[in-house]
Image (cartoon, rainbow, N blue to C red; front, side, top):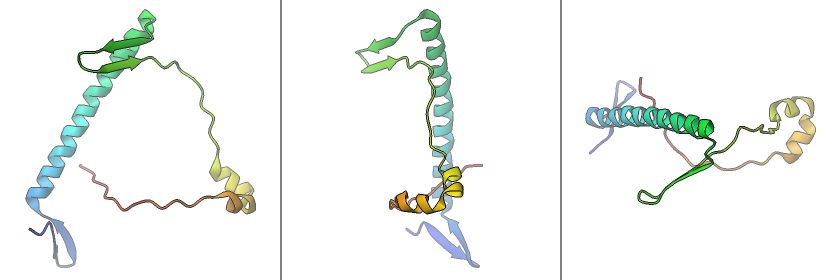
Length: 105
């Protein structure tokens, strides 16, 4: 089965495949939103009650409270602008495998 057709120079994805992927993406988004809501509720309760760890051995689940902290980052864009000669000396190129990006409107 051909998944992609080209009509008048335009690439068109098979309708059934397109419908299925869009459905999956919407389900994933809805599930992630539900997960985030539950995580926020758990976080809030753990903070309120001073709980650092919750375990559920039946479902193999362990939740640990991670306190707020500050993260140190390196501003590579600014460094490159101000020290382009040094940036080129230390920059590392890493190959990235091909992939696809799917967006559902």
